[in-house]
Amino acid sequence: MSSSAPILVVGGGPAGSTVATLLAQRGYTVFLFEQAKFPRDHIGESLLPATLATLELSGALDAVRRAGFVEKAGATMVWGKETEPWTWYFRETNTRFPYSYQVNRPEFDQLLLQHAGEVGVQIHEQTRVDEVIFDSGRAIGVRIQDEPIEGSFVVDATGQSCLISSKLQGRNWDEDFVNLAIYNYFSGANHLIGDDRGNILIESVPNGWLWKIPLKNNVSSVGLVADRDSTVKAIRRTNTEHVFATAREESKIVRDLLSGSHCNSRSIVTRDWSYQSNRFAGCGWVSVGDAACFIDPLFSTGVHLAVSGAFLAAALVDTSLSDVGLVAEATQSYEGLYRQQYEHFRELTSLFYSGNRTVDSYFWESRRITNHENYAPREAFIRTVSGQNVAGYERSVLHHAATPDKFDEELRKFDVGLNRRRVELNNANLLESTVVCIAGVKVASSVVLDGARFSRSKVIRGEDRVDLAVSDFVAEVVQYCAVPRTVSSLVQQMTVTSQSSKIVEMVTSTIGLLVIDGILELVGSSTNN
Ligand SMILES: Cc1cc2nc3c(=O)[nH]c(=O)nc-3n(C[C@H](O)[C@H](O)[C@H](O)COP(=O)(O)OP(=O)(O)OC[C@H]3O[C@@H](n4cnc5c(N)ncnc54)[C@H](O)[C@@H]3O)c2cc1C
Image (cartoon, rainbow, N blue to C red; front, side, top):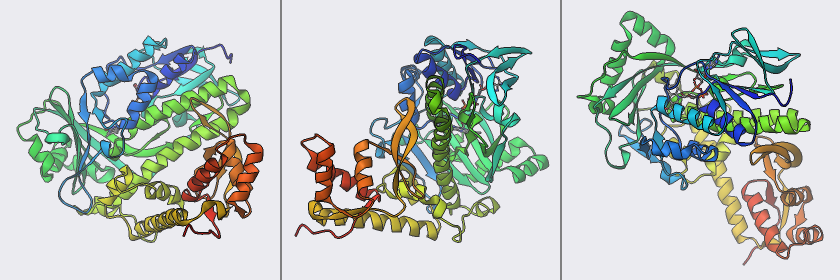
C-alpha cells in the first residue's frame, strides 16, 4: 500500500457519497465505485433534521433544498397509550433545522453523488467491487473483475451487502427486530392537513405498523413493517398484495388517506432485520452506513446514521493517513462513537415498540420489555433522556408510550437527583462549599473526535458514562477534586495555573456544570441564606 494511492470508497449511497465528498474536500484523491447506474431505486425517504447539518458541512445541502422535496415538520403517530393520533415536531427541539425533508431516494442519492463528482471524487458507476484485498490483515485495495486496484484506505459503504463484514467479520443479527417490510408507491393519496401535511404518518396495526410518507409530485410511499416469520407464512398462504392490503384495511388513518389513490406497480418485499457488524473498522478499512449497522426504520434513522457515520469515517481515514500514532485508538473511538449512536436509537426503538398499547396481537406481545429486565446497561440512555425537558425528542415520544414501570422508576430517580442537585446549587454559597468527585469518576487520556479529525484529549470517564472530552482547565478541576476541596481553595489553586482575571467566575460556573452533570457533588455546603 502506498499513502499516495487513492482512497477507495465502495458504494455510492448517502454514506459513500458523503464520506467521499468530505475526503476529497480535504485534498485526498478519492475513487468511488458504485455497482448501479444512478438514479437507482432505494427505500428510506424520510429524513431527520440532524442529517441536514452534515449535508451542510459537505456542501450538498443547497442542491437538496433546490430539489423541491416535501418539507417534513415532524412525525404523526397512532401508537402508544392513546388511540388518537399525536404529533411531535422537530421545531420543539431543533432550532437550527426545525424541519427536514421527505426525499425521493433515486433523486436524492443522485444529487449527493453528483456533488461528490463536483468536488473532485472520481466516480465509477456500473462498477461492482468483487472483494477487498487484504495483506497480513491490512486492506490494501479492491478487486474489480479480476483487476486489483491499490488504495491507501478502503471505505465499505455497500449498504446491506456489507462487503467486508459479510466475508470477514460477520454480523450480529438482532433477535428483537426480525422484521420484514412490504412497500409501494401510491399516486393521488390525501395527506395530513395543516402543519402536519408533510409529516411521516406511522400507524400501528394488529400485525405491525404502517408508514405513509408524502413525496413530491403527489406520490406517497406506503409500507408495512411486520414480523418476518409470520408474514412470510401469510404471504405463502395468500400473496404479498393480499397481506399488504389487509394491513392497510386494518388501519384507520392510512386507509382513509389512501382512498381514491392508485398504484400501478407490484409491492416490494424487503428484509428489515436489524444488525451490527462485528467490527466497524480495522487496519486500512472502515465500514459506514448500513455496511456497519442497520436499525429498524421506526424513527427514520438510517440515512442519518449513514451521513453522520460518514462524517466520523472521514475523520478516521484522515487521521489514519496523517497521524499513524493515533490509528489504533482513533479506530476504537470511531467504533465506540458509532455504536453509541446506534445503541441509543436501538434503545429508543425497543422501548417504543414495547410501549404500544393501542393494538394487541402476537406481534406486539412478543415485543414487550418485562419489568424484570436489568436497566443498568441502559443507564447512558436514561441519563440522556432524563436530562431533557418533556419536549425533548426522546422524552416527548416516550411520554406517549406505555414504558415498563422499572424504566419509569429509573427515569424518575434521575429526574429527582437532577432536581436535587439544581436546588442544592441554587441554595449554596458556592465559594464557601466543599465539592468532591463522584466515586468511580476520573480523568483519563483518550483519542476523541475533535472537529473533523481525531486527536488526543483529556476525558472524564466513569461507570455507565460515555467518555466526555474536556478542556485541560476542566480536567484539572476534576483531578483536584479527587478528594474533598473547598471551592475557595480550588480558586486559589487555579489562580496559580491560569492567568485569567475571571477565575472565580470560571471555577464556579465549571463546578456548577459538573455538579449538574453528576461528575462532582457538593459535600458540606454553606447556604446563601
Ligand atoms: C423498510 C425500510 C424503510 C426505511 N425507511 C427509512 C426512512 O424512512 N428514513 C431513513 O433515514 N432510512 C430508512 N431506511 C434505512 C435506509 O434505507 C438506509 O439506512 C440507507 O439507505 C443507508 O445508506 P447507505 O449509503 O449506507 O447504503 P445504501 O443507500 O444502500 O447504498 C449502498 C450502495 O452500495 C452499492 N453497492 C453495494 N455493493 C456494492 C459493490 N460490491 N460494489 C459497488 N457498489 C456496491 C449499492 O448499489 C448502493 O447504491 C429504511 C430501510 C428499510 C429496510
